[in-house]
Amino acid sequence: MRGSALAVMLAASLAAPSAAQTSAERARLAGIHSRGALIYLIDRAAWVATDDFRSKAALRGDKTLRGYVVERAAEGFTVTFFAEKDGRLVRAYLANVARNRWLAAKSFRPASAHR
Image (cartoon, rainbow, N blue to C red; front, side, top):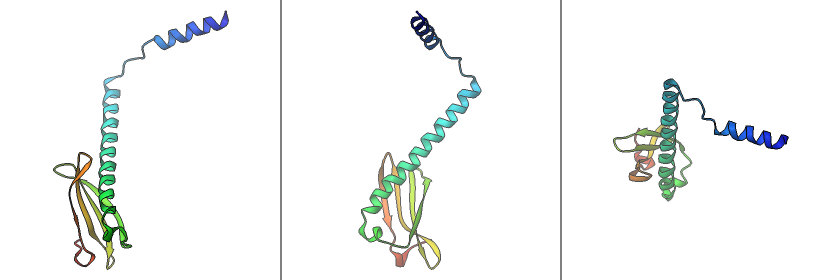
């Protein structure tokens, strides 16, 4: 008997609708969703650019590489990899990424690297 009464109570509580979200809660959730989507797109752009970057043998073994930055671009994102030269960071590789693929990429030789 007890088990069936408990089952009925649980079923009733699961069927009850939850309280509606307030407009402030909906706005906060929308902001969280937007931020999460942007983080995903930035991470995906870095991933696509890194895959292309690693396919370039001359860059892959470069011990002067220090990191990368992802920035919004007119279409998608620009991913810039930096190397250290004479104590400064210089561009080593730049890729434009949109819709999960790179659109254009450019490698900079260490001797002609730009700031």
